[in-house]
Figure 1 (cartoon, rainbow, N blue to C red):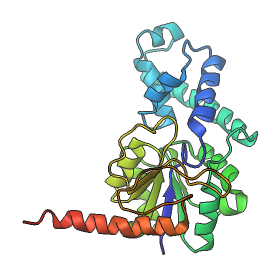
Figure 2: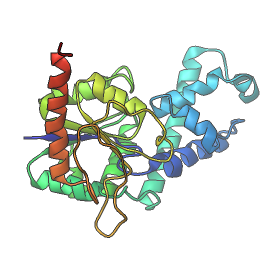
Figure 3: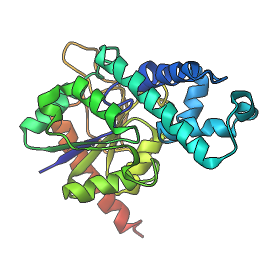
Figure 4: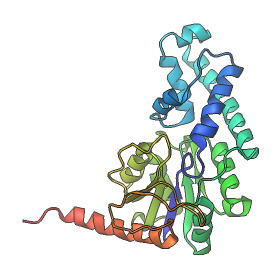
Length: 271
């Protein structure tokens, strides 16, 4: 049976702009840290995989440690980082619980249809497990979420664009890479999927729309829902022919087309 593996942030919901960024800034304010990230600065920090790792990048900012009174001791910094990140995760979960982060169009529809059709559905993310679970439950409801394995946080030693999280999902779930499709929203996520030997459909968001997705099977503005404007197809490398919204049949064709593209690439150029 086919399998779908979703990223979380920017895929299940537009969490970066409306969830993680304000949660980071609320945490900085709570601890009196001399930093606030605007959208342009956060776009740069998004190149770093993992929320904890983005916070850790503050230690490299000129003057930050001195202004914030951060000790040089590595263990003390590790403890501080863990405290900040727990606080940030709690703030983010509160936003999800308050309904401030609605799912992206088509997510609930596609996941429900895939589960009903017997597909394996999983989530693989560099975010904290508690945050990912909260977003997933909010997007698809508790009954469906209970049927979806989550791979998140520090379960692997390296974050995306390293393929470790996807390799772990494939191994733990016994997936056939040739029958598995990843849904991502960023260049780092695409690189992680491709590095694990998995085809990838990209649903862009405001932070990632201009990134390079040349290895993706297809690139769309969203998955789409009935009653919404038609999905914008930004790239269709495999010739899927998506119209209106992304259907389960479209996703099946993505998997089939990826096999063909991989086969053609393995044969190499002909004389």
